[in-house]
Length: 61
Image (cartoon, rainbow, N blue to C red; front, side):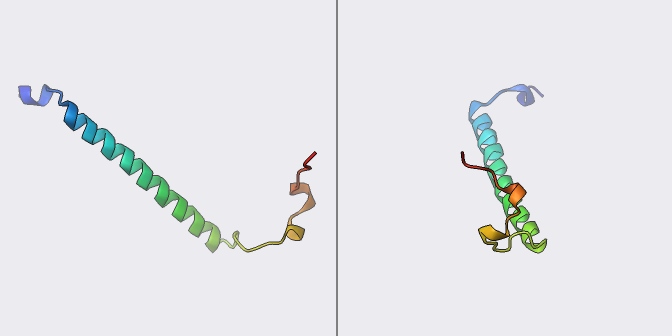
């Protein structure tokens, strides 16, 4: 059982890289799903600046 307690730096690097890659893939999937959800909800329609409510507009001063 002593083999389970050893630390292998090369394996640690592989695990860290795998976790980082999984995090990036997860974020990409989350963005695509969020975009689709907004499309399905009708929130991504093209609006002109005249369609924006005046209380949403901030002054540029």
